[in-house]
Length: 112
Image (tube, rainbow, N blue to C red):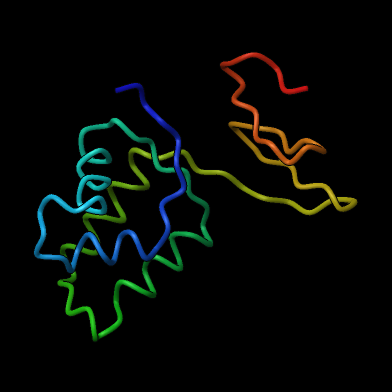
């Protein structure tokens, strides 16, 4: 499987951590993360949301699980920053936001 760059929805993380079904798609996503098959793309805002949601009492997740997951995402992921400037979003590191609203990987052919 080729490595994919993905933004992981918070609900996917929660579902993977609270399910008892080890073959669920959300658990598979965490496995792909652990094996490096996917590269999580994140921002400070995304990590803040992960942290806040995973700490909700109703999920009963241990501190060590939360810390280890967030550390794994930040250590193995690709951080991006968003700046609003003249109604255009500029994305540092991996892409440019084009008028056609597609993100371009700098290692591949240019966006048109």
